[in-house]
Image (tube, rainbow, N blue to C red):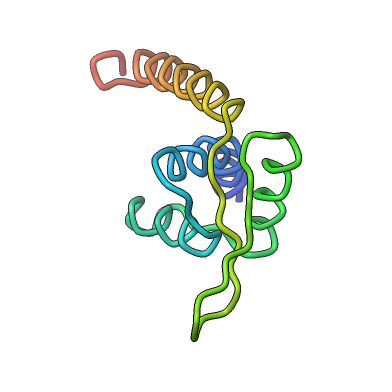
Length: 114
């Protein structure tokens, strides 16, 4: 039970970084972002719709991403998200903080210290 809570908190703490990273170089729609997270993490990280889309809306409201609706023939309308200038700054800061955090954890939990 505690492990699941820990996993959920880790996922919640990294979600913004993952989303911002995946739209750094090109706009993507929400479903694509969600599926890329799942695929690239080999299924370890999965977000349910009930929590994922509200996160995208919060990122947009905070000015880190901007979204626009796109309609393509034969497909349903999708909202594509791209990184804003503010989002690029936040992404750079989050990457640095995350790297520092992971390095610190590794220094403490690494096998040579066990």
